[in-house]
Image (tube, chains in turn green, brown):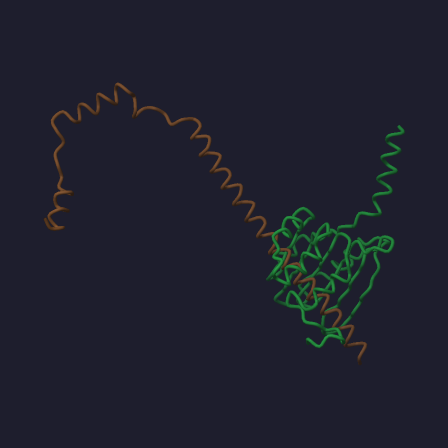
Length: 173
Length: 94
């Protein structure tokens, strides 16, 4: 009995430290889409892949810095031929999965362009997860990053991976 | 002797001496050379090499695929973060 209590106590203490993976299964959506990008990389695969990133390539070096502590990256991106081919309730279902530790840090609503929402899962001072929802009339993209996120390193995406600089202090744009 | 003649001599089909075939067949029957199975060690080594090649190849393909997926995921993440930041930037500078 003592062992059971101890185990439960350890699990209860450990649970808040583990990042939350969002359920990104949307039955039937792939069939409607004209193009689908589905990336599912758990921690083991990320570690394996990052070992084969080149030190000489700045983009791959930046990638290694970003993913080295992550537990998973999950991306679903659906492109559609016509507007309104996906159910906007999907976005509500995604939001519904977020616990109280998730904080919305960006919310952009546009009538003609995409609606962007960015959420961060914070445990203490540490960001342990991220969810990006980008809903356009003909495209829906969801990115779920699981694990401790170094925001400084994430900003290294700017200028890499085909992402242009947008910061005012950098004149690369 | 010229080269043509030397080649003709060397490549000329010669008949074997009388009783050559019988002697070879008798030797095979006696020593069992032709019917001796390959050594087990060689078989095991060949099988291991084949398995290693298949497994190694599979891992390499898996790693390359994972790396491509990871870079693609970061491309998409970066692009979406950029778009959101760009929109916020546009709104704030209006």
